[in-house]
Image (tube, rainbow, N blue to C red; front, top):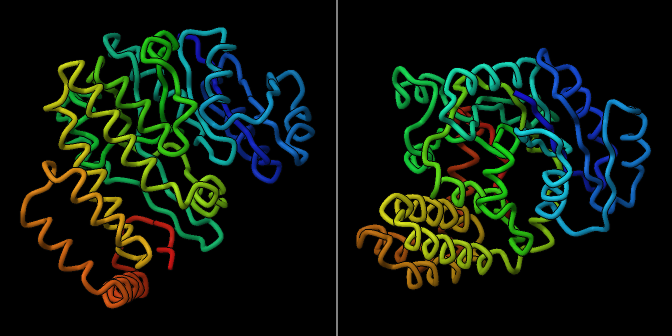
Length: 328
């Protein structure tokens, strides 16, 4: 196997050296490392070029994360693409374990894995999911028979633990440049419609840093709901065309419920919840719809209660996963 590591960067001078050092420290090195600078205005270029010929640097005018990843994929020389963002990390055996898994299961065209979510400024980190839960679902295999079932069970990976055949990314249409948020989720489902099986490392071997400022989320905040609704509708349409609707519908319901749960913390977003229930009513049980409508009758009270419950859980350290604090 030959692996190209593709890393998009935008104004990440503070973190990109840490990311590249984690890639260069791999016990099984990447065969090439491509960093696509998406029009950074800080000194990211200077930091990246400081690594010399170990890293292939490509500059493009600012066009977003999807376009930057696509530029790197097109430029890659090798068959396999290992994705990582410019502010996250791989642990030293990540590529070695992925390559071993894929060589042992040659029918697979993509693989993912567990990872640590880290609020490192608070010295808090935990694995995204319990390794034993993932193993129980895979049973005696190293892969999920269905990405869809893994998604609903929340034992799927994230961008920094995805390694995918280049030809598969191209056939699935690459990352959608017009998808302002959740462009990674959009990509994974378009792959899963065609290739359901996905490898999975149950042991966490990467770090997703949660303390990095989420500039995209802030920039597109007012459009967030419409972007999510349009994504679900487009994915439902694609699933129907590719005879995967039965597989995808539980995933759509899961995503919408997660977004609704997040919206409960912000009383300004309660109209989003009501519109979601109306727009996607067929995806929810009547009990769920009644419960959510009751919760949105008193936005201030419900939002305050959600923040209070979250505060108590944090103080008593009852939450297994490390997550960002809910916004007010």
